[in-house]
Length: 261
Image (cartoon, rainbow, N blue to C red; front, side):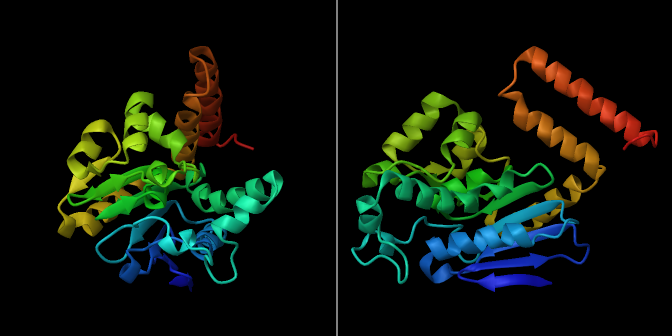
């Protein structure tokens, strides 16, 4: 079932209504991103039925996403959108608000009621890299190549990618990847923790399908509680995490005993 199909984004639902797939649908431009695409990604998140437990993000064609459409760097920018030059001329508050709006396309993937999986093939550059980082898990084809090119353009990664990147690979390696803008190929991505799994390109869809099935095997509430525990772990002390674990387990035990609220 197709719930959305516009501005380079398609949202479909499988027959069980437990797995949603968000597809970037502009392979001719290697799924380059734009503000219109980001708004459609936000809409896709809002349209997800409550039954969805796994959301898969993929790109049509040879590349997952080659990053921001270069048209953004022209004086005219995109039709109906402020150019980067226009944004730079605005007030601090206006500029902050626009970037915050862009970031919304990258935030809903972290919701505790979903597990999100990026299926990455070919290039995942800049905004494409950050979109893959927005997901909980990354399954990569053996031709996947990640790069954070923002610094080479005189910019910084500002689409929520810095926090998960540091969490996955550590500060020093994240700095080196961002400052040099080099490509991280699939084998290295798996070795340093960027990729959960690397498979031959021809097997990518099947591998993601198998992972989605495995993620659906456990009771939903237990998975939701576990994701919330793990996501909060880095921000808590050891003792605070112990308290959170006890509270979560108490909720699970009462639920299993039929004593939940």
